Image (cartoon, rainbow, N blue to C red; front, side, top):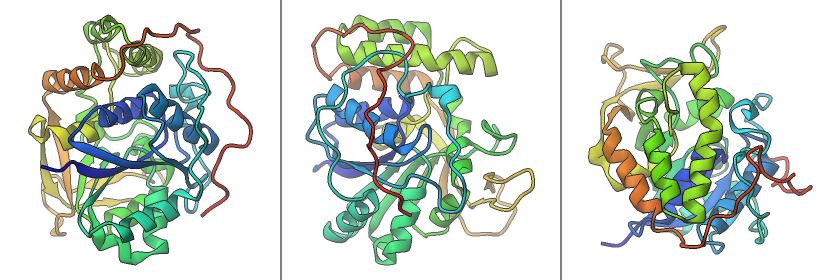
Amino acid sequence: MSPRRIIIDTDPGQDDAVAILVALASPELEVLGLTAVAGNVPLALTARNARIVCELAGRPDIPVFAGCDRPLARALVTAEHVHGRTGLDGIALPEPGVALAEGHAVDFLVATLLREPAGTVTLVAIGPLTNIAAAFRAAPAVIPRVREIVLMGGAYFEVGNITPAAEFNIYVDPEAAAEVFASGVPLTVMPLDVTHKALTSAAWLAALRGLGTRVGTAVASWCDFFERFDRAKYGGSGAPLHDPCTVAWLLRPELFRGRHVNVVIETEGTFTTGMTVADWWRVSGRPANAHFMGGVDRDGYFALLTERLARLGAAPARPGPEDGLPPPPVGAGGGPRP
């Protein structure tokens, strides 16, 4: 069977980085490119971080395109309080040696979807949905050509993590999310209801360090860094590893449980802007538009991540300070679009 062709739309973020690494370690997936979007940190950093991760994986050939530097209709909200000032705080890694790919991420998305046979490209969205909504606005003809969008975002039973009602990725650009959810593209959604059950553990981090690789040490160090926030906020001994759920779904869908339900995004609520209104109990009468996950086999999930991360590189880990990476270069980014 030929590998599934994917584009990863991302705002790295330590958990985004893990998702990218797992995808690049998986022969079942062919990563056509990464499209960076502003989210966890501003675009200059997400575009930089995406290249750092590709090079850490030994895949500097993967093109990284800088995309939208702000939401469709709002000011940008970022999450340095979770991910640190660079988005990849936790271990020092070299600056990227490869330049950004030429052109805007939205143009890459449109051109790729028009070039490849219809129904062959899956979009893996692990940040705000600005780039994807902008591509759909720019070229509506690409919408029916998308095989599926697998995204991390939203919540139902777990409500919000950035406001009482909203999950971060959806909250940052609710207008973009509303357009994507209404697009008619098949959607698989990994909400907080799943990711809050995918908690890291001391044993898992020790196993990663035991790999003796730069990748294993980097992932363990990243998790150590962002766990401090989640432990303080939620209690417990681990932190949710959100974004890799999307890639794990593509590799091992049997690890997850969910329902096909209707999902709409609140864009005008006084207290609920960015809320993912998932009709879990099917009471609205609206047609289902998303496969909305509600459960995960945690042990199977982390076993899969470990097995894939172990495939990446055998070079010794490079030690670095625990307070983050060196300052980013000036001038990275993809321009003011949209």
